[in-house]
Image (cartoon, rainbow, N blue to C red; front, side):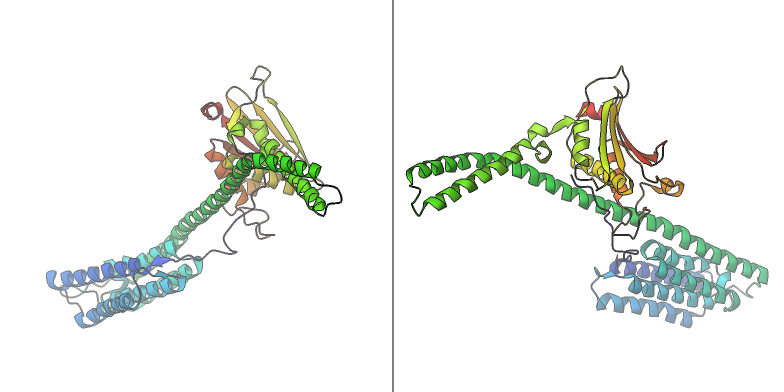
Length: 433
């Protein structure tokens, strides 16, 4: 059982964006419809004086650009970060022009400037999001200083400078808050999705390996009979062919190779660790732990195994559990992680009571720092991130897989020093098996 390597997307943040052109086009059409309705209501319904020509040009330009974009590319096109940022930047600029023509930050609809920023924070990477947020704050600052009169029935009201500056400060701070808050939450969701995808991929590979193991066991069983027949016929030919016959050398070679094939198949049939047949489907937990740790050793680091009931009054027999790729992959990765940090020894202890069963993996290395302990089990957390392909997904994947088996994973440091990972399953999990 080989431990799971840290798997991650390429270095740095993976490309975000990826939003369909159709979604952005529909959002813009909704904005255009809302702008037309609002201008019509203000001018015709309320009788306010609105610079219709300039406002119509700004709205019409947005509609024409939307038509051009829709006709130029398929609606299902996935747009990258740069294209999406340019798309949203135009929306910010167009809305800023409309607000300039209708009162600037005094216009109650100035809050709509926050919409493109919120969209950007949820679908774009950090760089384009910061650029669009900066553009929005610049537009807010300009609108606080320069604007056409607010449409009004009669003489437009004059707001004091302190009010306009207060609106400017509020919109600017809200833009910053939306950028930081929405982008951070969206980034965590994206990282979680990336990590879960990597876990699914690793588990799929492990299941394929398990299927190959079962296929090898079946092949060994099926090939045993024809190989025995070949061996019998070969021995008969050896008895009948003289030692000086030209065919004698070929017959001896055939006998030797058939014996070699039988030896290989015999190894398959007597190695339970490599057999996923029904005979080894449900095995004692200590055997599963040893199978998962096999192959995780490193030169100079010894693997030590301990097992037994945690209480003298507890059951003497170890609980049995169904062999699963999740359990072996998760335990194997934890053991591999301990071996990589250990100085000389890794202790793998399995104990149980009538209520629970537990596997603890302890090493004599430096242990976990307090800062790392708070983040262990989350995606892209590693003290070796960026070194030799370590991207901080190994522990997350191991924790995810083991929790799927019904276990609870906790991280800490052993009393004598070194890291310690404990996996505990309630007895109900084993009873269900």
